[in-house]
Image (cartoon, rainbow, N blue to C red; front, side, top):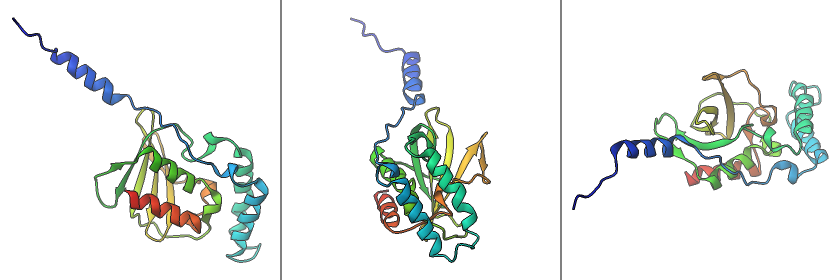
Length: 193
């Protein structure tokens, strides 16, 4: 009796389609607007700013646009970073070229931490990345890179037309200083990697 085998062409097609179709990640984390009222966020941001100086300091020119952005986006999950449907997030330590995919739980923990404006302060840093999170949409295109520095700072870079858009400001991240509970939560994500 002659045994039929699966056609190599069918195997290649199956492999291609199973690998090329990235699945949408169903995010399941508590956004900041389910925890804090607009008034609480407003108070926290002004309090945080006053820790750096008076109401006449340069940081204050960022507050009104940021609070307006938060108010406009309040309750809208699609306005949270990275403002796109995700298929995967990868992490690589600098200067390594190897990356590790995050689990859905790790992605949820990361996004819950960095999307909470109360977890971020106004401190500034120099750009010396210790590691990078790369965010991919459902078409498997890189859409954003979130770098982190060893001193609890983050910096976001959006990808536009296959190029990094460095002049983009994600207002809710302030200047990228993680603080308070945000430091602990972010470091817990890093420990899992």
